[in-house]
Length: 88
Image 1 (cartoon, rainbow, N blue to C red):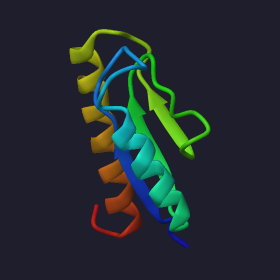
Image 2: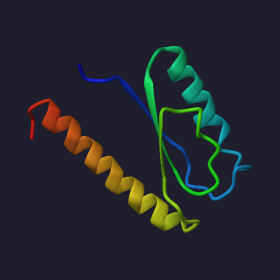
Image 3: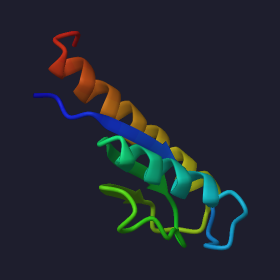
């Protein structure tokens, strides 16, 4: 069966103290409470390991590169879903 995923896209940040980080942590907790698998897209300095099922962390502090890599990952995930649904 197709797994249920709750994708979490955290703001691109090289700082764990980013004011935007509480939202992804809160979303991850809520998704897990509902039995959903979670995927977080992030850059350097994230603290989501152990809070989500899968972390895609781009190992750079260059925000533009992090955003570009997340776009590629998003396209790949869409392609996988479309293929599994027989739409590709």
